[in-house]
Image (cartoon, rainbow, N blue to C red):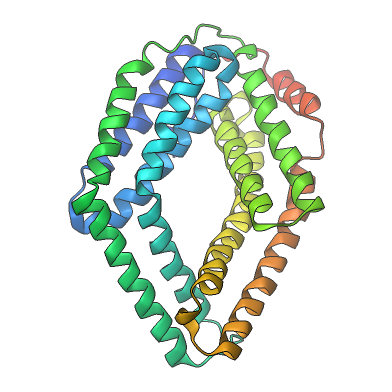
Length: 300
């Protein structure tokens, strides 16, 4: 956590390179973990990939579109090699959380049967990724090659202008996705908003030294919003799976009850997200960036 930020008085160009190297090295370490730690390796390495993509968005204007696109696609594709296993593990955890609730009126044996099916699917996905696709090794090769390119990223500007353009774009896109979700509250709309919120969270964490206490508070508020949207997304994934594979809950009444319950939980989380999002995205993108720039005109 502490490494994913510029240090006090650290110049921006070496700070950016340092952060990128640290995240890639952490990811490589996780990807080389023993097989019995596979779930953690997949989860943590994907988090590192997303942090690098967040960093790339912050310096997008500085490094140029060609470098940005090349590296963003690299880390996106590396993450996709691991996403199926992560998604199948999340479905099990989401169901386990639901099974602990007292207000879900479904027979315990039905939920247990559903869990057993999800576990079978998880192990099949795990076997395919490890034995057939060699997903961890291939993802590792991709980001190892990217690591060698990091020192060539054209980060030269030490002024706040090196990051202001990228920060403005990230904030603007998050604000626009909030409006999209308000206008059409679909699973896809909320998922897109969630991705933009996480990138803003990453950016604010990196820039924390410009005003540590204030930026920490802002980062915490954005993280809370990300959690609301993340929990709702996990529920949506399980909801879609039950709809697409009705055999998971063969009793139609129980299936309808389960889907209705998830929809209600998602609606509550979306309400919290709207309230939090409107506070975070109350400013125009220009005003938001100008305010942060006023805290410190240069990152020394």
